[in-house]
Image 1: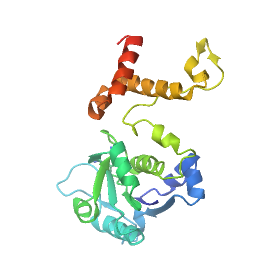
Image 2: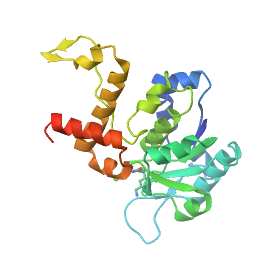
Image 3: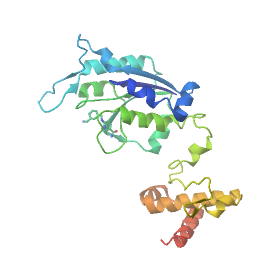
Length: 246
Ligand SMILES: NC[C@H]1CCC[C@@H](CNc2ccc(C(N)=O)cn2)C1
């Protein structure tokens, strides 16, 4: 999958995308990135990209011509059906369903705003989707773009070490993740659940599913309501609640 990021701070992405599974996938050519500095499309010798807002008020607004030309440049190098996505608090909420949808696309162009915003006419003329990673304001769209890149890239086949971990992730099943343990068996007086030492893989799978159900019920009941339960899951959850004092 190919990502084209439009930003005033391209350098911010280099380091952020050089580590871990994303860094490896990038080295292996499974992920491609282009970073374009929006400032390169300013037409004045001071490389201005912003100007004062019509109607007055604090801050500056990114100019429509500069942003539009930068988007046109990015789009020229991207597949026809790669959408231009603008990150902003005004966007549609990013959730695992939206991430899965984006992961099916041949590429994404991500537009990162700064200042008070981008002139609305550039957004109307060039942006396909507006996305929000949460109900809060960041100083720029860059960290939101990194969230989208990470969430989408890790769903690409072969990007994660063992593909199973993508399936078992929280949210893929619409549930939160189960607890995880590694050596030592006893740490600060706390033991590892004996089922995980049993070698009984069917029982272990069931225990993990039951933990995921129970934790989702305890911490994010809203997700359960949305997802619904099979009868087997209902039985597992009932047993969990009985054992964990509902
Ligand atoms: N009017 C503020 C707005 C002007 C244009 C630039 C954005 C960048 N900041 C962002 C971007 C995205 C998100 C999010 N929740 O996804 C939060 N913050 C802020």
